[in-house]
Length: 230
Image 1 (cartoon, rainbow, N blue to C red):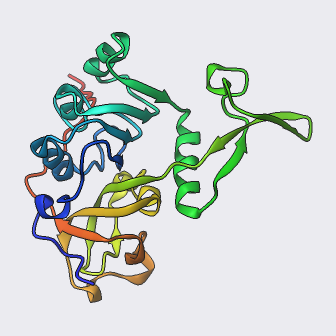
Image 2: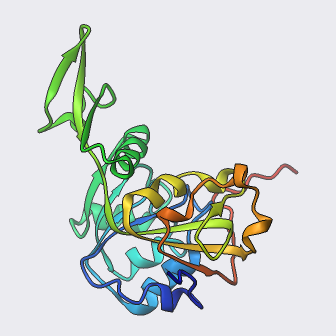
C-alpha cells in the first residue's frame, strides 16, 4: 500500500463537509499546520473538531473558526482564542468542554477499542450533567465514552514511507493517541527518511496506524505566549 502523498492537498482529498476530525497539538506546539491550511483552502464546512485547543485568532484552528468552517468543538483549553469566545457567547458554535485528562483518556480509549470508562474527574460539576455516576470503593465516578474520528490529522518530526513516526519533544503531546483513534490517519512530517534511519526503539507511532503521510513545508512554529525579561 502506497502511503506517501505529494502534499496536503493530495492527502486530504476526501475530507468532506460534516466530517469529524481530530487535530493534534497542544497550544500551537505540534499542530499539523499544512493540514489545517488545506482544510481552509478546501472550504469544507460543518466540521466537528476534536482538539485540545482552538488555536489563536489567526493561526492554527483559529483560521477555520474565523471562516465559520467548524460547527462543533470538542476540546479542553480555549482561552487564547477571542473568536472562539465570541462565537460561543453568540451561540454560533457548539462546544463540549472536557477536563484535559478526560479528553486525553477518551481519545486513548477510542484508539484502544474501549467504548467507555469511569473517572472521578468532573463529578459534582456541569461536566457530570446527564452522565451515569457509579460508586467504587466509596467514591463517585462518572461514565465517559470514547472519542473516535473519521480523520485524524497529526504532525510528527520524522517518518518513513510505511508511516512509522517519531516526534520531537513536547510536539508529541496529543498526536500519538489521535493517530490510533481515527478511521483514516493522515500524518504530516518535517522529514521523510529511509526506514533504516529510524531507530525501532524510538518509533512512537507504528505505521499500522497511519494510512497517509506527506512532507510538510513552510512551518511557522509560532510561540503562543512569549515571555521575555528586560
